[in-house]
Image 1 (spheres, chains in turn green, cyan):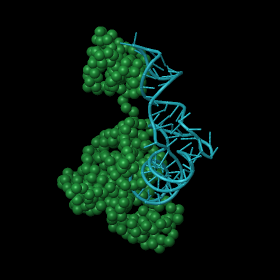
Image 2 (cartoon, protein in one colour):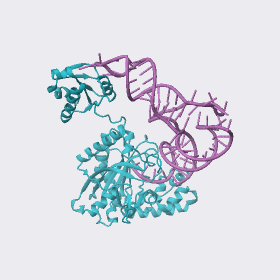
Image 3 (cartoon, chains in turn green, purple):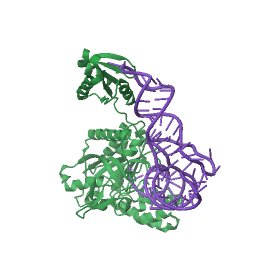
Image 4 (cartoon, helix red, strand yellow):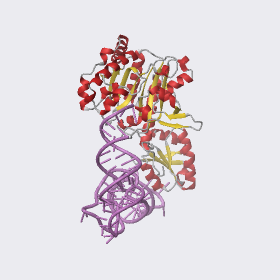
Length: 414
RNA sequence: GUGGCUGUAGCUCAGUUGGUUAGAGCGCCUGGUUGUGGUCCAGGAGGUCGUGGGUUCAAAUCCCAUCAGCCACCCCA
């Protein structure tokens, strides 16, 4: 702790990076709003139980990635590793069942004690949406469409692939799980160490293994389709059909699995090739069993979350700030006038930068460095005429403008 | 958590087989221009060589540990 450096896997956000994050959140919120998903935020920490009971005792997140600590009262608290559990908790503790369907959009930091890598941090940021109280496949389709529209607004939809799968209902999944365990146990000696471990913890994950030996064994493994109940099949068919209806392309990926236990039925991911090993940019699914697991009345839900850092890395251009107008006051009177004018012009909606010290030359140099569109110069000459010299910094052209007309004149640079 | 690569100025990097005052470009500041930016010219500031230990007459350079970043696995957003 002695060294003055950020904690491993955390990062300071500033400049273009900070601006991009904000822009992503704002763009997403704006689209979500049009879909009727309003803002909601829950605390960054909860009682440990909230996550432990819902994410599943076998998930990596619970077994080794949570930032858990004891507060002064002796309660075990945990920094949220994801957003859904907190919202589900709020539905129960806030009595929100009376207001279903609940449609919410959230954004904020999440914490996981993982080994950092590009696109993988210990404190990272997510945006996400939840649709709670809708059991119909229309809900799944809406939530996926919302995700696609946000990616489209950010200009990165083209760089992603929507992968889709069904995890079925819990009965189907239990049957399939048993079949998988039976099959893989028979060929356990051919499995990788990782996969043998998964056999007891999360057999479905074996299907997603990158190990070459595993791949051969997997090829002959039972397929989920054979175990899917008729209603589960019908549900998934309806989701696919809905996506077809709105013209959203997708790829069926039978090996797409979820790490968190609360998922059922639809699972989807928007993935990309451009981010290296961390190819998942937005992921979600249906979690009909979650709220009941937490002790509430059975309430269906579907949603997704996306990593802002990963989205940000995909943005072609950093989000540029609005080009400002620089005000340069010369001499005591000139400075006083620019201070007064700065406030007036800002209140009129213009982006104004004041030069705090130095003469004309320094002021213009600074204006140039911050990519100002124009410079307004006011010295004794101008004051005597009750005017200002406005210099267009691209063309170098200068105009004499009456101070009273400045707001109108500068509107061209908004 | 496992394995590998890397760590020199704010940024990108150079630094010979260990050898004396550790360099460049960009950026930053000042001046050339008492009221005119970007170009150019001159000058300047800025470095615990990631950190700690060891080997040696001598370490940025070799060894060990540690921290951090990157890559892959794992996992996931």
